[in-house]
Structures are given as structure tokens and as C-alpha cells.
Amino acid sequence: MGLFDKLFKKKINSIEPQNQAAPKQALVQKDNVPLKDKVQAINLQNAKQLDTDLVEASYHRGCCGECAKYRKRWFSISGKDKRFPKMPVNYGCTCSGIDFYPVIYGISEPTYADEIKDIIEYSNRPFVDDRDDEEKKIYEMYIKEKENEKVFEPYALRWEAIKGYDRQQYDMLVKGLPDIAPKSFSGYMRMKNGNTKNFQKIIIEAEKAGIQLDYTGEIKKEIEELTPIREKYIAVKSECLKFYDSYK
Image (tube, rainbow, N blue to C red; front, side):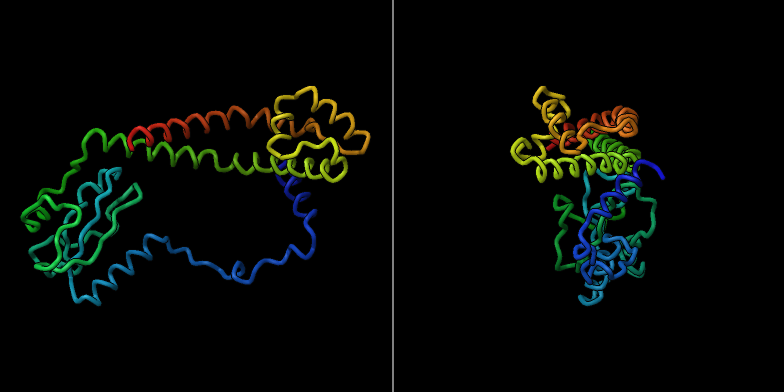
């Protein structure tokens, strides 16, 4: 059994029996259909109710090269309306995708291409990636952020296990020695991470009460391994957030 399993097993076992019962709604098995696909199904159903075969593709500035070929156009769902290209399905999107909303020719006005006078001509323009350099950069940062999250995901669980251990020790300190315990968990962690003189005094008093606050050798080894990985993750995440802030 690894450290991650040990820490979480200990945490789970410490839960009171009456808290172990999950709400009934949590026991209902969820389907694996992505939310985006559900929304798209609703949009197509709305088109059917409106008795229209046409949909308008949304505009997503940070989209991938494939979505860029289709955004802002009007499409025929069935392909029978030859004035417009057939609505694409599974076209190789690698971003968060574009949506398709029902429209009625002669009544609806272009939402995402309001500067276009002839929507038929605009919808039949060449299918090319027309993103500018800034749009490509936005997409590049989007992919960078997603890959960063994916790489760090398994390490995040291990890091949370350590934080769970910290929380458990803090709760024991508050319960056993409330007079010397920091008033908040965040304050406790600042003292612990800074290894302050006051924290060293608390460690001594806690040990007298049978409470171990310092990390075990096994946890220290885990922290030593995870820290550089987490620092790299935070650096990339900060880079992405900084870019998004400057873009807005």
C-alpha cells in the first residue's frame, strides 16, 4: 500500500459512521455524454420545433484551426438546402468547440457575422483556417493549460493526500491543545511551512500530548519528489492566467 492509499484510508476511517451515507442523488449513475453534446442535441431539437433546417455556427476566438473553418457560417442540417453547406459532424475539433443554433432564413439575422451583408455568400467562402496570430496564440495557451492539467492530475491526488494529513493533524491539535493551536488552518500551514520558532514550540507541546505534527520520513520523501513537479505546474498555470488577463 502506497503513501497516498495509507493517508486516504486513514482519513476515510476517521469519518463518523453517520456521515458515510451518501445522498441518494449521488448514487444515481451519471451518463458519459458530454454536456456540449447534450446542448447540441437540444439545439437541434429546437430547430426541429421551429421547422427550420438551418443552424448558425457560433464564434469562438480561441478556437482550433478546424473550428476556424466553420465558425460564423450558416449550415443546412440535412444538406438538402443547397444554398448552404451541410452542417459538419465530427470534424476534428481540438478545442472547446463551436455550437450550432437554429436560424430561419429571411427572419433571423446573423449573430456572429453581423457585418456580412450576404450570409449565403459568406457561408460558402473557402473552408480555410482564417485565424490571425493572436487567435492562434490564444489557442496555443489553451492547449498548454489543458496539457499542464493533464500531466499534473495524478500528482495532484498525491499532494492532496499530504494536505489531508496536515488537516487531520491540525484538527487533533485544536481538539487536544486548543490554547496553543493557531486560530486557522491557513495560519497553521504558514507556521509549519516556515518552520517558525513558535511552531517548534508547538511541536514540543504536541509531542507531550501524543500528537505528531512534524512530517514522517515517508511523507518528507513524498514532498521532496512532488515539490518540483508542483512548482512547474504552478509556473505554467500562472503563465496561462497572466496571458488571459492581458488578453482580456
